[in-house]
Length: 357
Image (cartoon, rainbow, N blue to C red):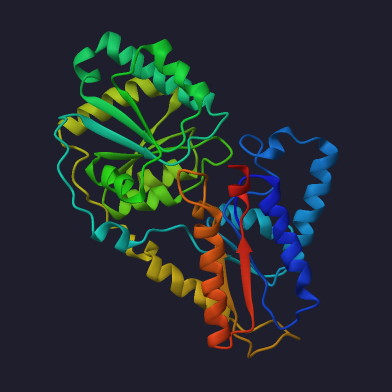
């Protein structure tokens, strides 16, 4: 149950409120984002102070009613742990599935350029990050055309219209390619072909290591973090996983990055960082441990629970399928299996973003 607007967060409260009715069921809340503290890219950025106070009350109530709370980053876990004195918080990071890459047939990119790939949604209210980056690329075109002609940024996924004007204003259409949404295999192929994977983080989430980060490093792609200084940029530099591009010094940072790439200073993957710990198999083991932990005092020690998560990426409009084929039919098949094997207890986290598309 994860998303960046009010609905899915609130649904968590509705689910955990069933704990009195089902005392032998372990209710686990899984948070991929901050709830009421994101002041830039969520509904809460425009919410009235009165509504924020109401939402904060519901947020705390949800944490208190949950048997366990999972977060993808220690920073998010710390944020929610401040709402409860109970020791119920666990960090299970985002990760990657090795099988996603195993079947790819990769052809070498023959453009001769240094390729930077950003895969995923580029969120709104990032002007203070995007503007200096695109301006730096424009300055590169004017002052160092030879270097400019060696780079290409490829954006795969949602690219807000308000950012397109910065491409025109800086006359950098040769260096910025908007590929929109691509099938998973094509997206992973683009990542595999690239020189660098790009993270663009706002100031609220400058600690965040998203799924795309783990997909990048799983293929031993150095990461370029474009953000204000934060724990994510420090983590990547300290572990030799890539470089930090400071929006305030974008121009000089970009020149250095291009020259270091040409000199192969950054080419070799020399990190001793354990990538395997973030594979889906290892993360699943961690999740199983959380699910199978004995209940606290007064709770059943013998109940086994199945945790099913239906993610909103299953259906995002006409271009990706139908409600019937992507959600209803698969759910019916799961229910048939439950009936066959007499599974009587399960938790369904159903996201609702597809309703907007």
